[in-house]
Structure formats: structure tokens, C-alpha cells
Amino acid sequence: MRVALLGFLHESNTFHSVPTGYSDFARASLTCNAAMLARWRGAHHELGGMIAGCEETGMEIAGGMATFALPSGTVTEEAYEQLAKELLQALQQSLPVDGILVALHGATVSEKHRDADGEVLRRIRSMVGATLPIVATLDLHANISRAMAQHSTAMIAYRTNPHLDQFDRGREAALLLHKTLSGEVRPVQYLATPPMIIQLSRQYTGEGAAQRLYQDLDAVLQWPGVLSASIAMGFYYADVEEMGAAFVAVTDGDAELAQQAADWLATRAWQQRSQFTADLPDARHAVQSAMQSPRKPVVLMDIGDNIGGGSPADSTILLRELLAQNATNALVVLYDPDSVQQCLQAGIRNTVSLMVGAKTDTLHGTPVAIEGRVRTLSDGIFIEKQIRHGGWGGGDQGITAVVETAEQHTIVLTSQRMAPMSLEQLLSLGIHPEWKGILVVKGVNAPRAAYAPIAGEVLLAGTAGITCDDPAQFHYQHRRKPLFPLEADAQFTVTA
Image 1 (cartoon, one colour):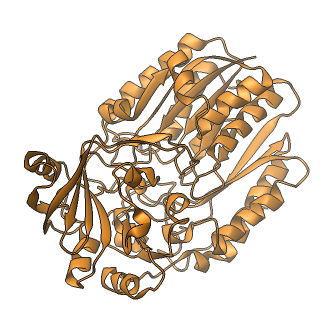
Image 2 (tube, one colour; image 1 turned 45 degrees about the vertical axis):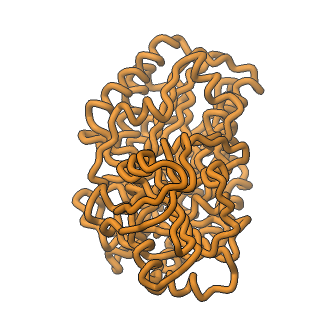
Image 3 (cartoon, helix red, strand yellow; image 1 turned 30 degrees about the vertical axis):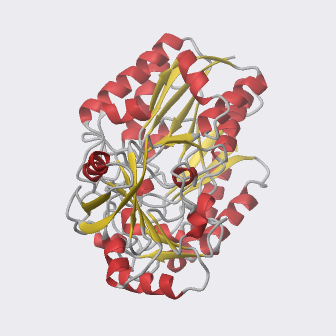
């Protein structure tokens, strides 16, 4: 059995003022054929799981291409078309194949194609015909469209947030494709899309209503005839028609059962929809709580500047509040290439006076004045060997400077945006995060895998920004209506 392996992953925040270009993908990861296999074999990622599943079952990987970029703004049309062209060329060169494995995010948006994932699948399907099996993996934050369901044979989404099961889902996809090609199963799938948004602060699968959703999913996976089932919590920072929660069931040739399973999951979620809303403390109250907490260090999640959701990584809202309340011994990481250059010019052990942060736009505070000693200058490269959200084995935050202030604040300044998925981001700079009183972490759920083991307490701060927790703060132009909680009178009934 010959299969093609493809990957095109990007979480597109359409409210970010800076678009995502081809170079952002090339810099992060863009590999083909043998280089692709070398890059992803053994990785804690769905592509690594797909490779392992193929090797386990004896399926030959005929070739392919895989690329991703850090969550950021809408993908430029030039970048999207060039990447799609290269992807399809890699597929063409792999033909003939018996099946395709494709890793997608599910919340990719280009300037022309709001459903960019559905468009990629449509082009793949057009090349290989209507019957060739295509099994796709998706991020838990996918906005799943009808086109994505129509042009794939089966879709499988992550089941944990933080995303720690990516390898497992990739392997699951490969095993399902093998069973399909062997004639053991005939996958059919159904997509249910109740009109609801699950706020990001309620998407932690380790507790509360989100945990109950996945207990329901575990139950459905035990139903006779169900091959796979998925919950996509959605990504409401992408202004697209299919924005919102979605539920998928894949069965062995039984379309009625697939609809029954997906509708049951959707109905169970709809019944507890009020549990997926939140009203978080603002910056002032969040900092007060962090300072008063006896459980140190306090991990203070800066939701409005959630880098994993495509934010600019330079919000100063919490830093300014920490200084206003005379906090001490806090750590803040900011994307600020200009300040990094000033630190390089000053040199290690020398004093600098800087205006840091808030230079991408005007939505995330204003630059803050700090003065301190340049403690560390680093190349910003680190390696992570543990399973972490995103499946990354390491990171590159660019040339990085660490400044220590008189208030014992540690200000980390990076020249590339870096989502806080790994403690190695700090440990590689000689920082012991467990020694700090407050750690400002620019994320919500994804950083928990790294930070929870050292945290005395995790607090969520309802800060402003393009990843703020409240969907009512965004001006949407393309979303479907109604959507709960934006329209409190939204209704959902399943089709008999």
C-alpha cells in the first residue's frame, strides 16, 4: 500500500494586523519527501504519529510535503497559493497512491479563502478522484466546515487541551487508513455543528464541562460500529462562517449511526452550553489576586495576548499593572526586537533604560519604561524533549535579552514570537521560574503542560487584546448567526 503524507497547518487569527507570509512557514518548517520524514519521524506530533502508523502497518510513504507556521494573522493569498501549489506538486510526484494522510489545523484562513482547509482538501480531492481514501487530522480548535467533511473520508481531531495526544491521533489516522485500504472497514462520517461558542477559558479538558465532553466522547467511542469520533471546540478568533463548536463521528459503513453519534455529542454539549461561558477578572483584580496568593509562583495567564492563538506577544497590560501595584519578583516575556538590539549594544552587566512592548498595534497596551541590568544575551534556541502542546521538539525565539530590574522583575525580550509551551524557553536562559513570585504567561490552556508542575496556583486574567476571552468583544462580519452566547435565544434541534 502506497500513501502520500501531507501537512499544511496554520491557526489564523483574522483580527491580527500583521498577515502571515510564505517566509513564516519556511522559517518554521517546510520539508518534502525524505527531508519531511527525517524532520517528523519520532516527533510528538500527528505527522510523527502518521509516520509511525505507516511503518507499523507496512504502508509505504510514497512522498509528500509538510509545513506549518506559528499562529498569527491571515495567510496572504500569495503565500497560500504558493504553498498549496507546492503541496499539490508533491502529491502529484507521489502518484499513484492508494490513500492520503493529511495533517491540517482546521482554522486556516487566507485572504481569498476563509475556509482555507476545505479548499486544500477540495484541490486534493480534485486531483485524486472521488473514491481515494483521504484521512485528515485536525486541531482541537478547528472550525470544521461542510467542505472539509465533504472532501475527506474521515477526520480525526485531538482530544486533549493542552494538546498532548497529537502523536496518538496521527497514528490513529494511519491505522484507520490501513484498515480502509485492507477492506476491513468502509468509513462514513457525519458532522454536527450546533450554534455555540466555547470560550477559551473553558476549553481546558482537565476539568469542568470540557472534561465532561470528552467523557461523552469516550462513551461514543465504545459504541459498536463507531470507528472514531471527535470534538472541535472551535476558534473564535477566526471570523469565518463555520466558526464554533463541531462534532464528528466516523462509522463503519453506517451513515445513520454516524449521524446519531455526532448529534448525541452535540446535544450533550448544547444542554450544558451555559457552562462554556466565563466572566474573568480584569488586569487589576487578577494582579491583586496574584500578589495576595500564598501559593507561589502564581502563573498569571495573559489571555488577551495568547501567542498560541495568534496574538502579537508584546502586550504590556499586565506588566503595567504589576508596576502600578508595586509588585516584586515577577517574570514577563515580551516580543520586542528593538529593545533586544538596545540590549546588545549596551552589553552584558550594563544598565539599560528601555520602552518595552506594545509595538505591534494599539490593542495591547502602550510601551512601558523599565530600567535594569542586562543579565543574559542568548541565541534564543532551546530543545524540549517532553511531550508538550504543539508537538514541538524545540524552539527559536530569536536573539534574546534578559533584563533584571531593581524590583527583581525579570523581563525577557525576544526578537521572534514564541508561544510559552516549554519551560526550556526560560531554563535555557538561566532562569529558574519556580523562584519567581508571579509568572506572566501569554496563553490560556496550552502552557499548562509545562507550567502546572511548578505552579503554586494558576490564575486567568481577562485582559484585552485580539485573543481576549469574551467573543462579544469582536466585530464579526462572516460568522453564522445565531451563535450562543452572542445570541442568547439561539436554538438547536437535531434532524431525525
